[in-house]
Amino acid sequence: MKTIDEHIEKDKAEIENARATGNDGKVRHLEEELKGLEEYKEHHPEDSHDPSPLEVYCDLNPDAVECRVYDD
Image (cartoon, rainbow, N blue to C red; front, side):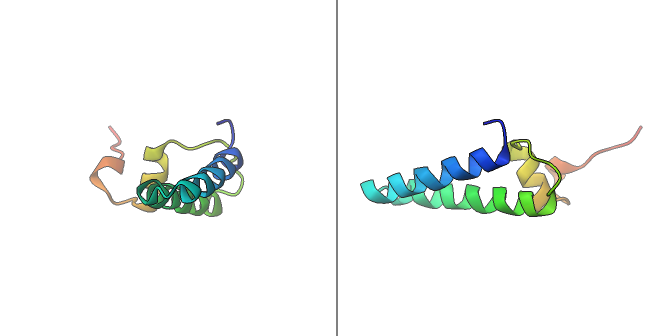
């Protein structure tokens, strides 16, 4: 994906396909991913790049150990 909007649209389409095939596990996974992407987009309206899963996680959990940044 090149933009977050493309990724959001792709996830929405995949959710519909997974629902049609009865793949509830995939639906839950994609809905969680979609929720994170939409929240990331709300927090960064000026940024249109497709964030990595780590970027989304750190945006939603800034105090997590994995997201700490140390200055030397």
